[in-house]
Image (cartoon, rainbow, N blue to C red; front, top):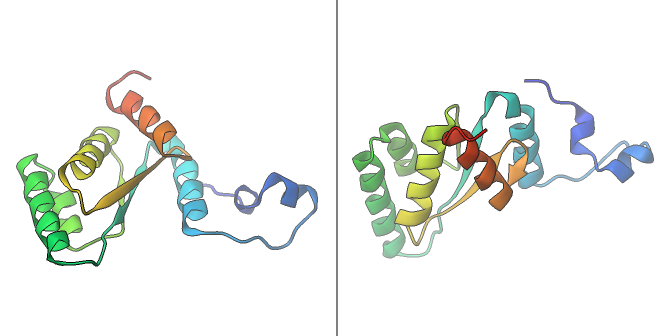
Length: 133
């Protein structure tokens, strides 16, 4: 993995020879997914709210659904409430992303892929997972 510090600075900051920048977690995950783009690594950022018993019921149901679809490693990590899931296989990432997004109302997920986030990342992952690119 090759990542340059310049990828973490905004273009206007680079033009001004800035020596410091502010980052949030999304900046870091986007940079990581961009650095790993040639290897088609997908990152799922999991959001586990700490609200009430419904959250745990939803988590248990999601874990069961993941097991039911053969995603045993993903189910184990979700049951441990892992915050970031990193996939080497676009097909498994696509399947897990949709299972998580569709099978749980209480648990959220954000996709990062090839330096993209949101809908753009979804379209790119879909293309790679289904051999359209």
